[in-house]
Amino acid sequence: MADPLHNEFPPGSLEARDLEHVFHPTTNLKLHQQVGPMVHARAQGVYLWDGNGKQYLEGMAGLWCTALGYGEEELVRVAEQQMRKLCYSQLFAGKTNEPSVLLAEKLKAMVPMPADKVFFGLSGSDANDTQVKLLWYYNNAMGRPEKKKIISRLRGYHGVTVAAGSLTGLPAFHKHFDLPIQGVLHTGCPHYYRGAQGAESEIEFVDRLVAELEDLISREGGDTIAAFIAEPVMGAGGVIVPPAGYFPKVQAVLDRHDILFIDDEVICGFGRTGRPFGAQTFDIKPTTMSLAKAISSAYLPISAVMVPEFMYETVAELSGEVGTFGHGFTYSGHPVCAAVALRNIELMEERDIFTHAGLVGEKLQERLAVLADHPLVGEVRGVGLIAAVELVQNKDTRSPFPAEQSVGAQVAARCEEHGLILRALGDSIAICPPLIITADQVDELVNKLETALNEVLSTIR
Ligand SMILES: Cc1ncc(COP(=O)(O)O)c(C=O)c1O
Image 1 (cartoon, rainbow, N blue to C red):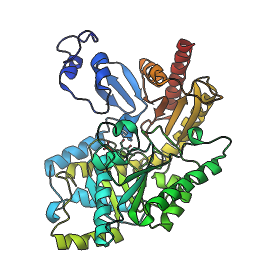
Image 2 (cartoon, rainbow, N blue to C red; image 1 turned 120 degrees about the vertical axis):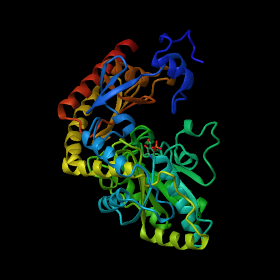
Image 3 (cartoon, rainbow, N blue to C red; image 1 turned 180 degrees about the vertical axis):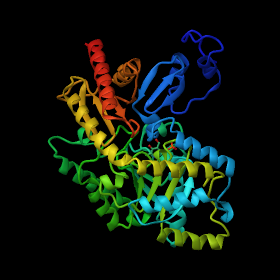
C-alpha cells in the first residue's frame, strides 16, 4: 500500500493509483513509495509533457530508444494500415508475412557483417537470450558440447532475462536474483578514466585489459568458450566509450581461440554513434548482432538477431534431426512491429538521419567538452549522440562523492526542474537524445544541464 505519510497525491489521482497498483521495473521500489511516479502524458518530436502540462526536453530518448522522436505520423499510418490488413501472424512452423520478409531483407543489406538469416523477437533481452541458446545449439551441432561459456564485461548491460541478465555485468542485476548462471565470465571494463593504474597510458591500459582477457581464456581453456559479447559503447554501465584500438586488439585474441563476437547494438545500432552501427565506429567485425530499440524508434517492440550462414546451416541441420528448432516467441515476426520497424528505417534513410546524428553529435560533444572544466565534473565522454558527464568530489584525485550523497540524482532532479530529462547512472549523467534533435535543441540541453550543475555545486558548498 502507498505510504500516505510520505506522499501527498490526492486519492484517485493517477499517481496515487500507480502507487496502489503498478510494480515498477528497474526502480528503487521503497523510494518510489515515498516520492511517487512522474506521469508521462504526451510527447511530440524531442519534447514530452508530464501530467501537469510541464514540458521537458527528452534528453534520454526514453530508454535510449526513441530515435526518430515522438509523434511521427508516418509510423502511426503504417501501423494502422498493417493492423487493418493483417494484425497478427506468426513465423512458427514455416508461416511468414510480408513485413517480416521485407524487414529481414532490409536489415541484411545494411548491417556490417555477412548475415544470412534474421531471427525476430521483441526486446534486447530476448535477442541476447536467443544469442546464448543459438550458440549452445550450434556448438552441440558442431560436436563440441564443452565450448559453451560466454565472456561478457563488467559494467556491460545486455538485459535482464536469465541468460541476458547473467551477461549484464552490474551488481544490482545479479544480487538476490541468483545470477549469473554458470558459464558466464566477466572480464574488465574499458573505462580508462576509472580503470587506469598509476601513470598508465591509454595504450598500456588497453594492452593490460587485453592481457587479462588472454589470461582468462587460458585459465578457462579456449575450447570451453563459445563467444564474447560487447556493446560498442556501454550504455547503462555509464556510457563507457572504449579507447582507440581496444576492439581490434580484443578481436585478435578472440580469433586466435576461435571465440565468436556477439555485437550488442541494442543502443548503438541505427545511428547513435554517428554511423549506422557502432561496429563501424569502433572497427568491430561482428559474428552476430543483436538489434532492438531504435530499430523501430520504440514505436512498437521488436528485436532482431543477425545470424551468419555457417551458424544457420549447422543449426538447421540439427533441427531436422530433432524435428524442430525449439525456440521462438508468439510475437516473433509480428507483422505490425515489422512494418513499423521497416518504415522507421526507411524514414531514417530518406531523411539522412545517420549523417544528421553525426553532425549534431559533433556539436553535442563540443558543447559538453566545455563542461569538463566545471568544478563538479571529472570526465566528459561520448561519441555521436550518446554521452555522459561524470561527477567527482575531487577533480585531481578523481575521488567520487559518497554514494549516499546521491549527487548524480540531485543533478538529474535539477535538470527535471528545468524541463530536461537526463538519467543519473550513479554519478554519471547520461545523455542520449532522439537522433532528430537540432543544433538549437542541443544548446537548450547543455545550457539546462550546466544550470543544474551550478545549482548542485552551490548547495554542496
Ligand atoms: C545494450 C543493451 N542490450 C540489451 C538491452 C536489453 O533490452 P530490453 O530492455 O529491450 O530487454 C539493453 C537495454 O537497455 C541494452 O542497452
